Amino acid sequence: MGALRIDLGTLKEGVNRFTFRFGPEEIDLEEEDATYPDPIEADLELVRTGSTLTLRGAIRTRVERTCSRCLAPTDDEIEARLNEAAWIEGDRIRLVDDPFDRGYDYLESRNGAFSLDPLVREAILVCSPIKPLCRPDCRGLCPRCGADLNRGDCDCPKEEPHPAWEALRKLTDHREKRD
Figure 1 (cartoon, helix red, strand yellow):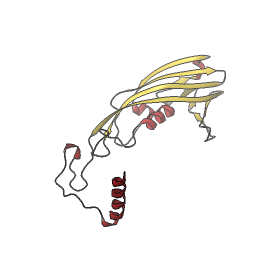
Figure 2 (cartoon, helix red, strand yellow):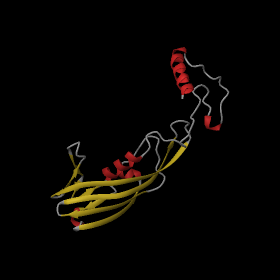
Figure 3 (cartoon, one colour):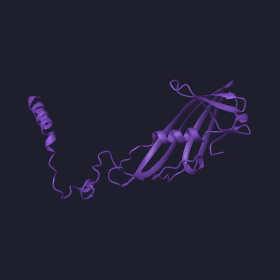
Figure 4 (tube, rainbow, N blue to C red):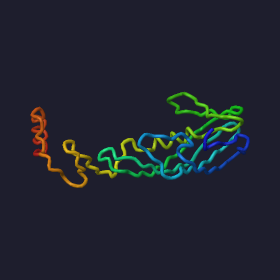
């Protein structure tokens, strides 16, 4: 059922705190070209008020990938936040989605327990960089010879711009002179 399993019967009225440490495979967090070298840590707070439930928490992990520009290894710290509202309906938990979506989802529940795995997985993926960089000013690889431009310029001849861009260059040059 997953790593972040909560027994609905043990949730008392008011604040309930939980701390979890688990591996990415335990919540089906598998991404191509991504490695999670440390356990994922989740400090969660579930506030029960009658049949409503507020889920809040902090999720921390580290992900190693390849730089999208120069192919060097990257190491990113991820700190994701979880903030969800839900209703308790018998032994099921119904999430309240974004008001613009107007949809509802149920958390997986079995034998009176429910899993927060999909919420935590989603929070991590949303906070993960789409195009990881080894550093913010990464220059990438030369498109001709493949040299790492972070280590210095390569010996490839500088390419002249296509003549179709000449009119635009003149326009921008004229603007710069005017300013």
